[in-house]
Structures are given as C-alpha cells and as structure tokens.
Length: 170
Image 1 (cartoon, rainbow, N blue to C red):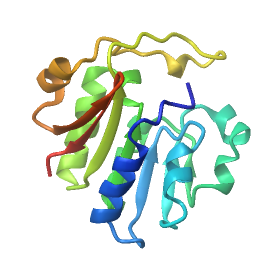
Image 2: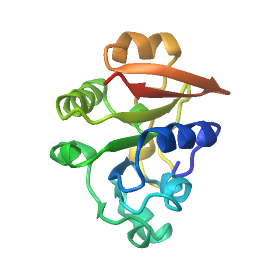
Image 3: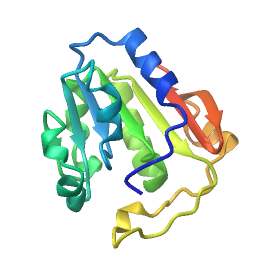
Image 4: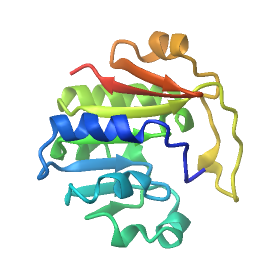
C-alpha cells in the first residue's frame, strides 16, 4: 500500500538528523504517498523520489513534493545512486525479487551510499487498487531471513510490531 505503518519515524528521523547535514541529497525509493518527504522536508530541501506507479504521482501530489521525481522502476535507476548522500527504502524491499535487492544493495555499496531500509516481517500482500507492484514477493521476511539474505549488507536497528528497520554497513 502507498502508506505504511510509521512505528520508527521518530528514531529514523533522529538517526538521519544526527548523521546528515541539511544540504544533503536524499533519494526516497518507492515514495508511495510521500511520507518520507513529509517526515524530512522541514529540514531537508534536496529530496528526490522514485515511484513506479504513476497514479500515485497525481493522487499524492508527488511532483510538488520532491525536487526531482522519477516515475520508473528502481532497477532502471541504479546509476543515480552515486549522486546521493542517503537512500531511503521504506517498505520497498519486500516488493522486489531477492536478486534485484542484491543488485540494489551491491550498487549502494559500490557507490558508498548509505541507506535506511524498513521492511514488514511475515506480511503477505497482493494486488492493491489494481497495482501489481504492491504484491509482496518476499512475504516471508523475519529477522533471521533478513540476516541470511542480506546480512552482509544490512545491520538490524529495531523492531516494533512487525516492522523492522535496517541501515547499510558502510
């Protein structure tokens, strides 16, 4: 769904504020309703977004929120990562194939761009409002599975309810 549970907003916001200057460039992958922009835009002016589902652009007024908005599949935007100081992936990883997640994480590591990744654990989801991109391909995620699949790239930070957040190890 374009709006996710926001259990970790305060701690993620503090994490970002403590590490990234207000003139940092941030890339929000899978903008959905633009909640990451809402959370950060009072302090950060340079927030770009990638959203695959074009109807969300108008529905959530994304073009008037993000500095630059790419209405594309993130897999076609990997070359953009090197231009950013921070990448956010809030409730995106579970929508992607494992091999695509590895490509994203490897590119972030290659470009030395830190990322914050939030995922729901054990959360099946199908098509939502005719949007096939809302399907949870990885609906089996747990702390143990995340460690097994992505542990070389990601460090666990916290879990509330069934929502966990991670940071990259670089």
